[in-house]
Image 1 (cartoon, helix red, strand yellow):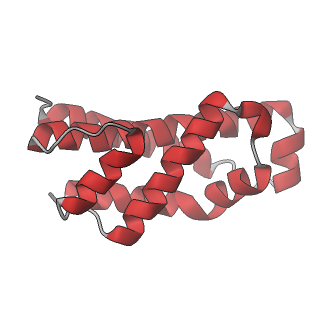
Image 2 (cartoon, helix red, strand yellow; image 1 turned 180 degrees about the horizontal axis):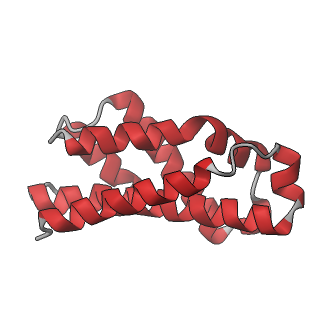
Image 3 (cartoon, helix red, strand yellow; image 1 turned 180 degrees about the vertical axis):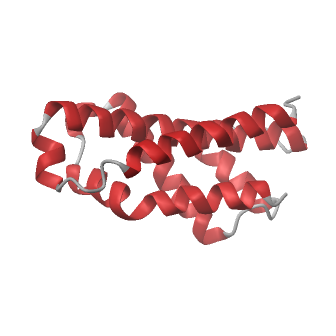
Length: 136
């Protein structure tokens, strides 16, 4: 069983990654894609943030002794079933898990329109997820 400190540590890590990612919001989509150093940093911290969100979901599930997920995405559906997160946020987090899989396994196929959209507009979804977890 997961203890509360694991959950708190995951939240802290996610906040750290989000703070780092905020520094890259001033770059254009083109700058991110074309500058290998910026691209590498953005990709890595997006990956770390999304993986930590998945880990946080799984830690909450273990802590609350909910049924075990069989996939990373299922963890968010379980949190929805248990009234921890609402349906709209569930779908956003499921898409984030899918994005993480592309970052991890299909990095040649990364769509920088999506990377830029996440960087500019979807980090708030992660923040909302953290708020829901902290409210339990």
